[in-house]
Amino acid sequence: MTDQDERGDRPGGERQAGDVDASRRRTSRTTRRAVIAGGIGVGIAGVLAACTRPSPSPSAHPTGTGTTMPSRTPTSSPTPGGPDSWQALAAAVTGTLLRSGSAGWDGARVLENPRYDDADPQGILRAASTADVQAGLAFARNTRTPVALRSGGHSYTGWSAGGAAGTDVPRSLVISTQDLDDVELHPDHSVTIGPGARLGDVYAMLAQAGRAIGAGSCPTVGIGGLTLGGGVGVLARSFGLTSDQLTGVTLVTPDGTVHEVSSTAEPDLFWACRGGGGGSVGVVTSMTFRTKPAPGILLFTIVFPWSAAAAVVRAWQDWAPTADRQLWSTLKLLNGSRHSAPTVTITGVWTGSKTGADASVDGFITSTGATPTTHTARQMTYGQAMSALAGKPQRVSEAATSSIGTQKLTDAQIDVLVQHAAAAGDVPGNREGGVSLDALGGAVADIGRTDSAFPWRSALMTVQYTAVFADGSDPAPFDAYVRGFRAAMTPAWGTAAYANYCDATITDPADYFGVNTSRLHRIAEQVDPTGVLSQPHWV
Image (cartoon, rainbow, N blue to C red; front, top):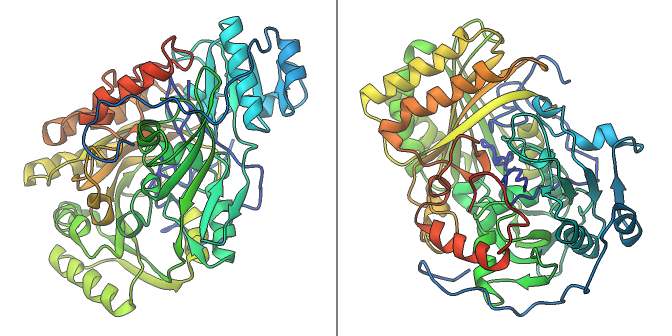
């Protein structure tokens, strides 16, 4: 089971986001703990609906669909044999192998979502090298032990826990890449990053060098899972998806072979790494991205009265996905016990001149026909803006699912959206829930739908339905709320969903991968014919 963290993709960030496949999953987490601090208020913190949402208490085939199978030109092949017992695995690795009762076990076995705190995997391998990943996979093959992959641990479905109640994942060996978190900037301004590096640390280190990549907002999301599922973030419309900025990947396939893949070296494997979801074709141990000069950013928040909700949605869907690509925004309709009344909030970033932002945003406000109750804006550096968007990282119990906004909503469909968002307040124990609409378009649409595994290039937005509740609560009513919301919007948007916001009740992989499903399945079947990385309802 792999774990994507596309909660930074939770744009609302990538979750994201993050995090997250069940049958073939990987997740990443970094050991650098200097998470960016700061912020400019609750209106901005948690802009990408993932782990940064406030909570009362913490607890390639270059083009075309392609039928070419990956050429087998590995960098290195696995050593024959390999460990066949837990003791042999412990002796074979330089990282840490934890079992129940080990020092640090309780902290290591839990994810970012406390609803999966009963996780009881067979063991957790915190890999310190590519060779450790090879050893872990060899052990799994030799002993027929199920595998769960983890980088940041933000999986909506809990698949990366390696055996938590309600996840349909057996007790597994968790192969964690959280300690593979180095960030190395090169003279050509590319950057090589371990999959476990957390977004907060990546942003801080790049900002110090005056460089930038576009990704999600949640600071604790591992960049590995985020990127593998696509990587929707606050600069998506100007930089593209995080996976669009990817130029090379070090990947260990389930047979233990190490591959260095790119657009020219084993392009099918590289294609699959660009939106095909975590763990679909192997375990990533390193990723290289191109960067851009860090832009100045205007960060803005607009709050409208709830009475204007329908008008704001109507105007936003006309504006946000087709605005100048220097602008990205998210529209949130939220309710719950944290709110005295339902809220309508738009948060956005602008990477151009302030004059251009004023004209675009003011035009949008005028088109709503409503007067905002709050409108704030602040010019910031890239590093400051990413820190402000991060808010205060904390673990929260939540339910979530997603849609892909493939077309504009009619007035009647907007009414359904608004009514279901308001109904978040009718679910007992729902601290905060509703919907987040995160704009696509711009640079995201520059790439063809079959040129990477992420197929939703012409979509207007990604959509997240969320509910946050007290740790230890029965998640069933909150799951019912978010899934009911998704079902209510199916007549408008169909069943498409974002791979980094996966849902255990989505049983057809085509809902995540669309026209790319067959090609992704063929690649996954070739590199993992025995299902070492098998996870629920995946390719």
